[in-house]
Amino acid sequence: MESTVCPLKPNCALFSEVDLLDALKFNIETYYCKRNFAKCARYKLHQQGLEVPLKLLPNDKICIQCEIKN
Ligand code: SF4
Image (cartoon, rainbow, N blue to C red; front, side):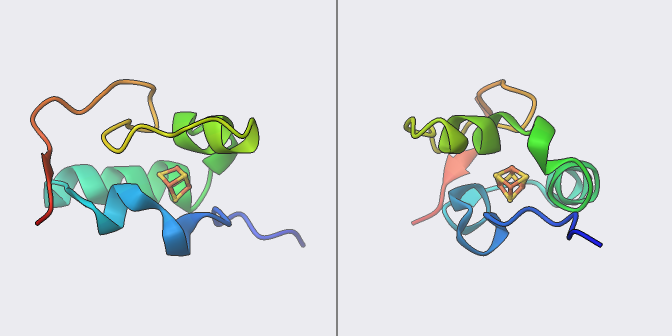
């Protein structure tokens, strides 16, 4: 059976470089990263070879309140 976990997860800058609220992080991982990565806006841009904005959320919205980690 094919894995349903996003192949980009180990290197996804959303988790390594952006300070996400725990609840938001949990929801993203549960819905997108572990089940529906093909629907993720970040994944789609990456697949097209396009630049992925750091604060882009899987729902195609920029996370205005998210801080970049130091
Ligand atoms: S946020 Fe999107 S691109 Fe990043 S690991 Fe999750 S599904 Fe993959």
